[in-house]
Amino acid sequence: MQDDEGIDRLDGIAMMLIWMGESIKNLEKLGGRDLLDAHPEVDWKGAKGTRDILSHHYEDIDAEVVFYICDRHLNSIKTAIAAMIQQLENL
Image 1 (tube, rainbow, N blue to C red):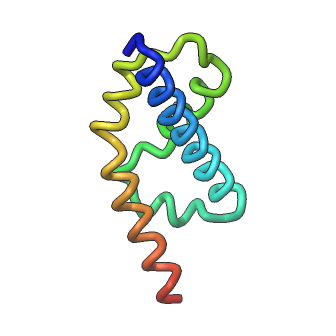
Image 2: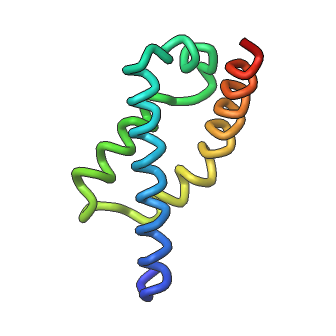
């Protein structure tokens, strides 16, 4: 991923992962810990930690690790968030 398009794509993905991690932290601060605990299949701590690494150690980003995260973990996060939204809508 050495060309400009690849670097732009990596930057965009990294920014979205930072946003997701920050959103998880904010949900937790606002009392959403029960929502997160209801989905132990998701590594919430890992998602928040990924945000911290991407935000504070951006120069050390490994594109292969970012790809692995997206490939292996985003579907479970997406499924959990959809379930949370449905749960909140049913209150």
